[in-house]
Image (cartoon, rainbow, N blue to C red; front, side, top):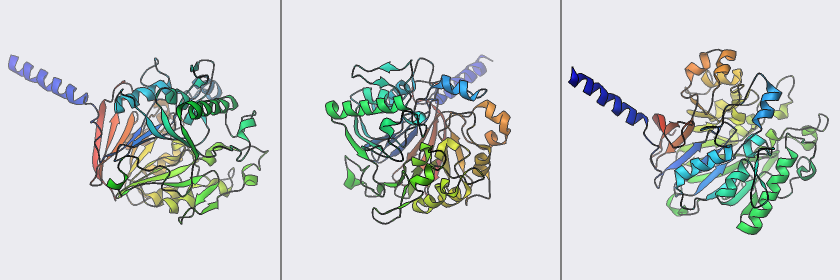
Amino acid sequence: MKRNILFLVTIFCTIWIVAQEQFPTWKKGYLDIHHINTGRGSCAFLIMPDGTNMMIDAGDFDNESFDAKYAPMFAPQVFPNSSYTAGSSIINYIINLLGRNKPEIDYFLLTHFHSDHYGSVRDASGTSENGYRLTGLTEVGDVIPIKTYVDRDYPDYNFPVDLRTNKSGNGGVEFVTFQNLLKFLDYQKEYCGMKQEKFEIGSNKQFALKKEPKSYPGFEIRNIKSNNLLWTGKGRNTIPLFSKEELLSKDGRFNDNQMSTALVVTYGKFRYYAGGDNSGLVDQDHAEWYDIETPMAPRIGKVSAMSLNHHSNRDATNKNFLDVLDPKVVVAQSWSPDHPGPEVGQRLLSKNVGTQKRDVFMTYYHDETGIGIGPWFSRGIKAKEGHIVIRVYPDGKYDVFVLDARKSNLTIVKKFGPYVSE
């Protein structure tokens, strides 16, 4: 009897230890794509095969204003717990990955100027000794140096309106937060040597390997789209998706989502798409130009994995887009109770879209969402909460790790794979 009890205890301890396994260290030749769940918007962090790294967005929105405006919907907690801000949560994650010995971010790409992608200055926001407020991107960059910063319209910031004087918050671009970003950029450029650039559509050189580029000729990051311009597929040539007049046709108002940058990461046969909050909906309330996804899809082509446009909101991820990209792995950088839109959820799980069944991973899925749209979606997805990490190996195979967002270390909840790049 005692032996049986001892055996069961041993098995339990073994299971517990396995369950607490930490994410294995990056090695040269791996491509890691971390979708970091802070509960406050988008943040992805890439470690390229030679060790060069890149962060895409670092969101932090005003959750109290969100709760008041959209009640009974509400924002999730900050992960891993309430002692963190979104920025400090990202900092903690990056230090866990890179170590405390002078971590740096080689490239930072801000897809567009909405708070859940770069921050929101509010009363509770701290102030750096360098003079700017700390929220999202500025909080991360205040602690971890950013070598090169890229956004959709640096340095003019005049499309489709002058964002430097945009006191009305047109486009959903918070004036105080944008001014704070400019203050941060000015300081970092003058005193820290940060390079600052505009997103170069069509380029495959802007986000290049810095350490051993010749060792990985099969690696590339191709810039596909920014503002209203789409890469043609040849050289650096672009075509307009919509005009400034079309964008501002409704009382001079616009939405910065449609300005989002988009890119494709290629590593051998593996391809990954990320495109901020680009939209893809055409209906009685949205003109044809609002569908950015359909003309963009052929320029992207088939991918192995993708981050869903607009967090899986209902105005994106149309059937044309999914048919052409045809991903095996789908990641939703989600946080709101209306993520995903029911129509998006149906398309993601449908057998009649694309050529294969998709494995869907969400960084956060509210229980209340399931009440609204029914239990069918949550039963069909692989993860409802966590940091979602795609690790691509030199042979083209890749795994997906779900890490526990409620812990301050990189604890594995579950591993999926191996997948084979098509």
